[in-house]
Length: 273
Image 1: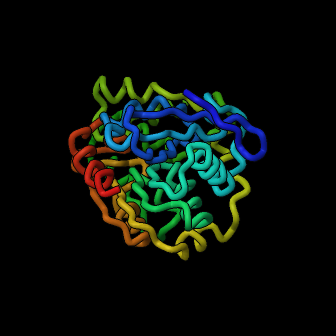
Image 2: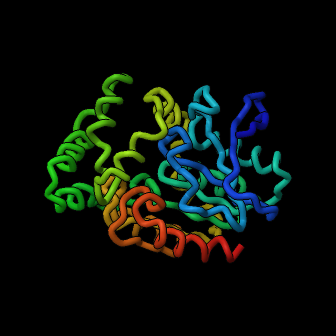
């Protein structure tokens, strides 16, 4: 892990996946503000070109609090400057896709291409979410309990958030085997950091994102992703004029459940750079 100094003097952490000497692809993790180790090595991605993962404000390794995902796009551009990159290719997962789209809208001359993995989509489009429908079809008590928690009251403190996370884990995956359970336990985060991530965002952020010049974009979704749904991701990809790859039998973490299919979808995009 390394650090760079942001414009306001904050030390921001980052790490590299892969040892190649080519200009790296930048990556924004999700959560939001979840410990970045949940990314693992992205199923071996980063061989060509390497991937540099930003540790956003509010993650355990950078600390502090987010200034809101719209403003924190500055840190992504700061990382690019630190690495000597002019324009750059950008990947993001889940809630991190908001920050990635903010960077595209605010810095259109810097972002060349986007790959958005199981994106948080409902905020950008009006499609009806089908998350509950996807989950109930599984007829699994653990998934039913996860859905009941996700559709219930929001946690009011860290203890309630931690308790909800234990119950809601199965909603992140198309299966709930030992592999998924072990992955779900990796990478902690705080309710206060999550709240901060969604503060200070302009009221017209959605409109500004949709009006931004479009860059070539790949969206990778999972047909068993209860957390964000399928219909919303399809509408999201259409709104961004993106190439959509929907992976079968896959939840919110495709490198965990469908690593081969994930690499097949992603490697073509990486090679086009």
